Image (cartoon, rainbow, N blue to C red; front, side, top):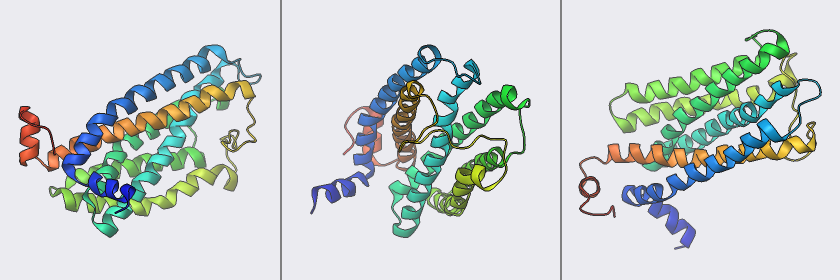
Length: 252
């Protein structure tokens, strides 16, 4: 068997995944926080103020990475959900459901920072702008998936029902992404591109990209930690979990 295929097959084993997550989750948390700390320090104190927005633009270093993560996490959750429904892989159910609270957190941060940024720029905390409204719908969708998952006692049935909702909700992602292009909007158009053509001053971009990378790395650690906790709850009562809890043995 191909080594990569064998590794993925082993990763589907609850004890193996527990060891994997326990080893790498702290690295994801730690490395992500270090990268974000550098990015936010540079964004707040090193880069120059914007010639139009002044220092208020600095909230971009939290707002934009959170906004990108709110969409990326949902897309990943939908992929895990589709794999779980098609191939009945329990680990993908766990990973999909672990994505939801993290994505909801990023979406909430996006909305809060967007409102704070919008007050001095637009003169109001909130406007039913297409981008803001669709992002709010995304938050409700995340909360709906979380609520549905916890409303059903059987974990497998709950995950399948919530996974179906996650897949249906994918239609919202392109609406959020292209809302500023499709409709007249208060929200500014795209000013940052990972492939070039950004409208920001080059000196402002390294801290932003550091925040983007840092949030992704932190997300990996958070996802592994949450998935590990759910995996242990589902496997409660198994010998390997009992040994792990009592410290009499390592998960195998």
